[in-house]
Amino acid sequence: METDLFIGGKWVSSEARFDVLDPATGDVLASVADGSVADAGAAVDAAAAALHAWSKTPPRERSEILRRAFELMTDRADELAKLVSLENGKALVDAKGEVTYAAEFFRWYAEEAVRAEGQVTIAPSGANRIVVVRQPVGVCVLVTPWNFPAAMATRKIGPALAAGCTVILKPASDTPLTALAMAAILAEAGVPEGVVNVLPSRSSGQVVSAMLKDPRVRKVSFTGSTEVGRILLAQAAENVVNTSMELGGNAPFVVFADADLSAALDGAMIAKMRNGGEACTAANRFYVESSIASEFSAGLAARMAALRVGPGTDPSTQVGPLVNEDTVDKVDKLVTAAVSGGASVVTGGSRPDGPGFYYPPTVLTGVAPDAPILREEIFGPVAPIVTFESEEEAVRLANDTEFGLVAYVYTGDLARGLRVSEALEAGMVGLNRGLVSDPAAPFGGVKQSGIGREGGHEGMLEYLESKYIAVTW
Ligand code: NAP
Image (cartoon, rainbow, N blue to C red; front, side):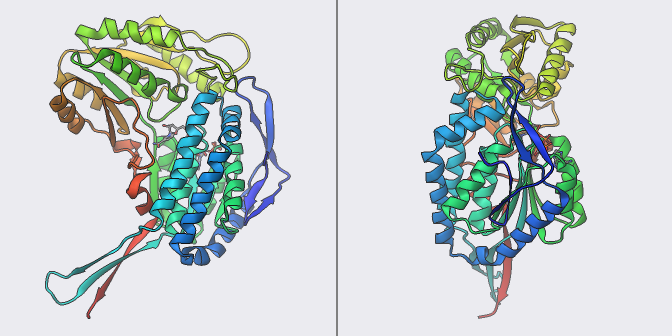
C-alpha cells in the first residue's frame, strides 16, 4: 500500500503524517505523508517541468498510455475495490461499481485524446480564414472528495492527460490511499515523471491556495462541497485561473401517478442508495403524487428495511458505514429535526450504538416543507417523502433549491416526461432512470451545483483552450 507523496515520478516521504481511519471500526488503517506548502511547490515544479514534453507527446501515445491505465485498473479491479471499501467504508459491491466506472474514464479519454478537433472557416467578409486550434490549458490542480475516491480522480486525470496537461491531484484526507494506488498504476502505464503528482495533505486550504497563487498553475478542477467551491472560485479569481466546479446537489426524485411503480421503486433505490446515499447525485427529496404516495412509501420502506447493513468489506453487505463520525452526526440531526417538525418514521430513523459510523436505511413521510432535510444535502441513507397534487406543483417544489445538479422523473407519459425534464433547473435529468453517471456523457450542474462538465466530449474541452488564428491565404 502506497502511503507517501508522489512528486516528479518518485515516492517522497515526509516527517509529518496523518492517520486514515477504517470507517467500519474507527481504527487506524494507515499513516499517510502530510503534504506541506513546500511539497506543493515541488509538485508544481515537477508538473511545470513536464508540461512541454507531455503537451508535445503525440496524441496517439498519450491515448495508448491511458488505455494501458484502463487495462491495469481493470486487471486489478478487485484489489482496488477492496482499498476503496476499506478507506471509504462503502459496500464492496459499490466499490467494484466505482472502480469499473473510474477505469472507464481512462478508456473513454484514451479514445478522445486523438480527437481534439479544431476548425477552419471562411470569415463572413470573405477576407480571411478563421482557424481555431485547441491547446492544453497547462498545469492543473485537481481537488477531489472522499465519496468516490477512484472515479472523481480518473474523471479529472483522464481528460487532463488526454488534452496534454500535467496535474497535481490533492485527494480528500479521509481517502488518500486510492489516489496513491492510482498514481502507481499511471506510472506503470507509462505516464512520464511529473505529469501526474499526488499530494495528500491535512492542510488542504493552505496547500491548494499556495498552488493557486503560483502563476504556472492555469487551471483548478474541484469536486466537493459548494462551500469550498466558493472559496476556490474566489482564490482562482486572483490570477484569473480557469475553473471547473462539480459541487453539491439536492436532487429531487419526482414520481407521477402514471409511472410504472415498480420501476420507480427500483430507480429510487439506485438513486438513493448507490454508495449508501453518499453521492452528489443521491435523491435527496422524494416528491410523489398524492394518489400513489402511500403505496410508494410502503414499497420504498420495505426495500430499505430489507438491506443488509455491515462492514463494507463483507461481501454480503449492501450498505456500509458512513465515512466518518461527522457525517453520521449530520444525518442524525437532519432526521431528528424532521421528526420534531412532524415527520413520521416509516423505517430506520435512529442511530445504532456501538463502534463504526453506521446509520440505518430510513424512510420519512409527512416531512414539513421547511424541514432542513429538504434544503441540505443529506449524504446518507435517508429518504424524505413529500406529496404533490399537480405537475406545476411538482416542478415548483423540485426547483425550489439553490442547487441544480440532477433531478429524476418517473412518468408513463413521455410528453410529460420531456416537458418536465425541460422545466427542471438541473444539469442532468434521469427520466425513468435512477442513474445518470456515464463516462460518455457530460456530467455537471447548474445554479450553485457548479460550472463546467466532466465526461463525454465536453469533459476534455475543460482542459483545452481555443486559439483563433486569423489567416490570409
Ligand atoms: P469538501 O469538504 O468540499 O472537500 C472536497 C475536497 O476539498 C477535499 O479534498 C478537501 O480536503 C478539500 N478542501 C477542503 N477545504 C478546502 C479548502 N479550503 N481549500 C482547498 N481544498 C479544500 O467535500 P467532501 O465532504 O469531501 O465531499 C462531499 C461533497 O462533494 C458533497 O457536497 C458532494 O455533493 C460533493 N460532490 C460533488 C460531485 C459532483 O460531481 N458535483 C461529486 C462528488 C461529490 P480535506 O479532505 O483534506 O478536507
